[in-house]
Image (cartoon, rainbow, N blue to C red; front, top):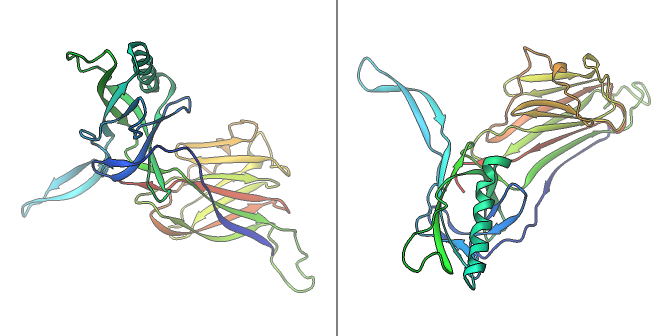
Length: 318
């Protein structure tokens, strides 16, 4: 039963600014990426804008709200822990060779932050000297105002920006992927009894090196008529039956992508196939920190059928 299986890390290679000492996280290079994908270096002290490290906050552990119930013998018992949105305070100095250059830089950065309210979140990316990096999605909240003091607003000024993060966890910039592919089918009795890979792509142990649960994305390449994903440690599973959808079975080379958070099933051509999931028993499970045994099973598979699992580990701190 020929199987191809290998975790693959696909690194991004952005240009990063020089590292500086930043409160709560130490020595790091920081870049802001606006919704259009433009990268704004934030720790290059030779640039026309950079972070004022003194005053930065909100890069540490995730904030939580604890819900408890009084205990009859005194004290309380913890009932629920709820992660809260994160707020990051980000002081920025902006300058220019003359007033017109300063004004152009000030306006450009203001737009880079405030456009998140119209076009979707930007990303704050923290890179370490060892090449690792984490990012968090941010929205502009307030603070792009000058100091209003004598001499400011001519060739330099600073703003204390507040950024709001709906998801308080930091995400690795490197996607972790696991690939499983079916080889050519074999005759059950030739030359001896065997199990064909046309049905089961095998058991896999997936490692989440982050601090909290993460929600993976699955991409299936046909041929396949039904796909079952099982988390073996809990028994949670979900099945996408392609023959129950308007699309029908996946043909060779066709793809379908399943997102677990938010729940979404789309064909390669954009069709909504979520009705093919085995509701209400389907559980679009997450992957906790550490190792998790999972199984991929495809009905109607043949040579070329494949499953690709993609996920980004998430962390408490930058």
